Image (cartoon, rainbow, N blue to C red; front, side, top):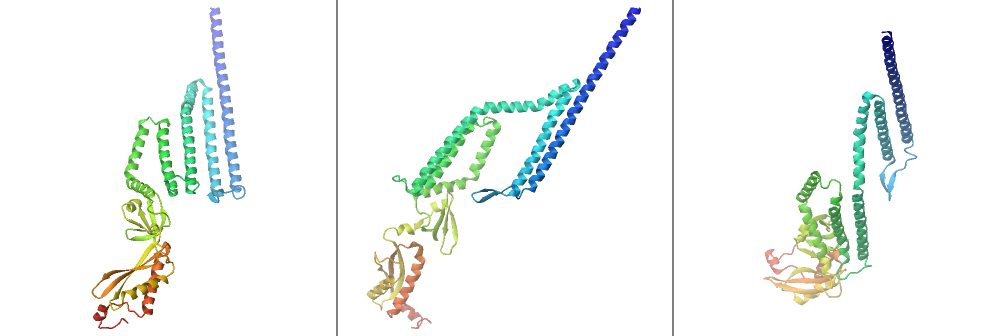
Length: 406
């Protein structure tokens, strides 16, 4: 019996020792956790302190140390904007470091105790597993990424080569029979758009998620919106291409579209813009230009010159030969009119009380057409007055009782 009592005492001693040892172990782990939390709290405070000091120094030296970001004399970002970006980046970095420290501290502390060890593993898994999946996805996507990079590099240098040849053609250094110099720019732009579309079509299957239904649905939606919302724009774009290759006019030409006459100041992919004599700018959609009759006065005057004409009526009491001489004399005294071919007169009608005449002159100075008309009309009046010939028809005197105007 005494032996049994001694044995029970030994067991109790062992149990007490084990409990004491567990308590000591728990106390040690709790101390380690306290140290870890203290160190991390100090590090977080240190990061916040350093970021605050650094932000203050950057803000103080914004005007002297930080210079504006410029590109070819164009200010992209001012010194204040650059400072704001740097300060914002520092704040983001501060929050990221703090979150990272908490992410490390909490699982480490939880892993010290058996009761929270599984929770620590779970916290690590919530963050590590997505990061691992992303890294594996990136590694698997590397071959597709290399393919996309190769395609983009090839297309880039193909476009550069086309741009080089387009400039050579525009400058007249490269001549292709049947291909006009003013076609080079529009043709390059057209080929560039086609290459971009080809690039998108080739790269599309290599994009991540391109086979998913969501990605395909978004693509179909964007295509539908584009097709519905840009039908007029596409029509004007196609009309612009047709006009370019028809070559009915070029920049600087004096043309007439419908009832509007002016000089071409812009010919883009979608519109044609004219400037009239009143310095007003009139814009025509390319589709309107394509469906309208266009008169190009510069093209008409490229050979012998553009013919300007003035119509007058003179009574039968004045011989037609005298009228011819007067009109030719007025034409020869008008500046900006060509001597060859010579001006000529046509008799265009025989009315009840007067004959109709038309004076025709040649000029190649298309930009001065209105001035030439004004000077020509002035000279016609002066020549008739100098010859003592009235420009009033006999029936006018009958209607006014033989009185002259004034």
